[in-house]
Length: 545
Image (cartoon, rainbow, N blue to C red; front, side, top):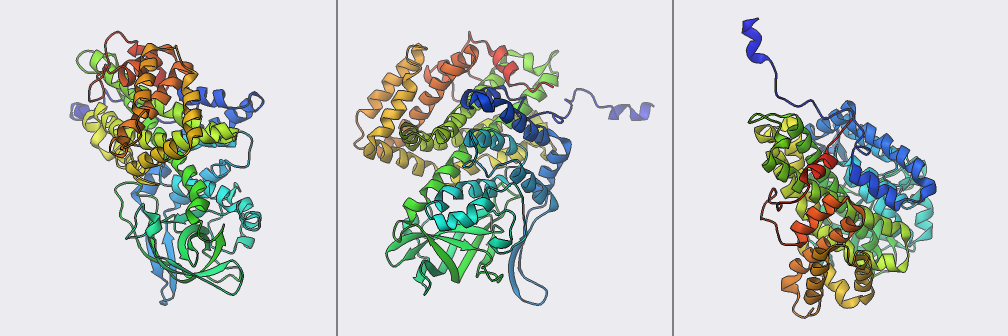
């Protein structure tokens, strides 16, 4: 009827749903194949396609929306006035978290090629709902810390690496699976954890303490246990704080409030008060930072992976929209200027994925050389990749025009989430200073880095020139702090370039080296130089069923 003609929907893309997020990501698939033992490949592909298909389903995507639209609520007391200190979540949160645990996102340390397969799954899963990635990340990262104490590891490691999501607060002995959080930051200290004032007083039982203090940020407060830092008699020390004690009583864990965050709305981040809270020491007194540093490093890798996942989803949505959307007598994706924008975004996304999986492979290798590489490359990647996430998601949203500014598109959620990984687990300056520290104190780290990028020597003249310029930067480390960000950016992009030159299609590597390393690039996305095969780059990033 004529009265309904104005409501006919035309020139809108179909929903990007009902597909395998892993299999549709060519860069990720190739990275997994590159870094996985051949005898495991069929098993790993099947596993990752399982979580990819789940992540791409309409049901799971709807759970992600519901979890974000219904943020957690703090309940400090029950109806009778008893202190309970619990956080209530929407059922969709529990469904998502259960799927993540069941998919092995806390098992990176206990399976063959465990870090690579988990990294790929984490990159996929964070595209649907980034909030539940926090407890999954913290739980996986707690394993190497607990291994410093075999007695603790015997109790907790089987629970942390379990594929059963057991949400009830019970003693560890009564659990089928457990999650861990972390509490390092305090009001007066921020990233300077040595300024922590939480006090740890030894108790009669060896290795046990009573903690008193306030943690400004406590991640995942409904977890079963927490690794925290506090000042013991011999100095800053790492402790395990269980939510529930062995006798079934609740530990003193006073949740004061939940943070009202820019993004990451589905996840609870709280302030917690310790007042005679029972804790078990992990590692030696006075060596808290050294003890917990493995957890920090592992969560930093997840920041890189999470940002790579957000970028991938943003690019997939932008390319999908422009593939179907028509304007000015043609498909948007076929317009030279839009094609330049999409290709530029796709290159950034692929470079992030290649670097993130390379770091995960270094964890699986475990050799001294690979560990040395991580000491330099991990903070550099954390600095650079997480900072690239925000401009990528904003530009991708703009590709959808006004539609990208509307919540239903999903792009605003990606935009709000995009700065998070740059801030958490040490903001940009902390990462840059860590890189400088590795360069000055651990010569093996630079040697490992140079060996890695040297594998691409002679393959691209722009990469070779960038390496030469990098040598000039490295020649004078005195007074480098003020230039640290510039140096770290160069370290990260050269490493990305070396990986793409060796492993990516020629059109991707050519575009990356021409723009990021060859200085033929503008200040915004969509400024790639002429003469590149941008159609092939965009086609590679497109989701096809």
